Image 1 (cartoon, rainbow, N blue to C red):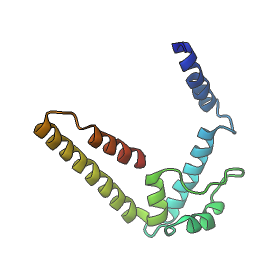
Image 2: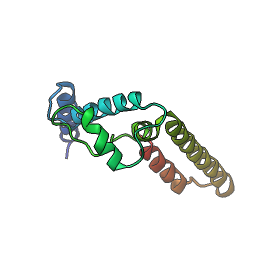
Image 3: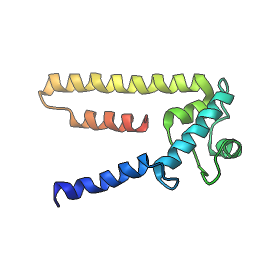
Amino acid sequence: MTLSGLLEPLQVRLLSALAGRGDSSINFRINVWMAAWRMAQDYPWTGIGPGQDAFNRIYPLYQQPLFNALSAYSMPLELAVELGVAGLLAGIAIFCHALRQGLRQLKTSVEETGERGWSQISAMAAVAGLGA
């Protein structure tokens, strides 16, 4: 497969997102995120409560037509919507602590063995991916 063959799907995807097509998954997520942001603004201190049941009860009041969702599809927004500001801050603190511990383990591993700590790097990448 050539480089142009690899880049063409990416180009099509990017152009569909920029064209604002109503059926794109990017447009879907943006609409869900906007509704979740409004939910978080309306319930800043307590959130709506944890779990999919709470989200399914409240989300229809904020959703755009044709954009049914099971969750906010974003961990920070999910925390803000379900648990409010305190839950969001706690989630950020846990996320930062996990990454800090991973970096500390990586540094210790490299100093002790002289090898790269691929398992630590993989674990930190997984934590970072979950935090997105």
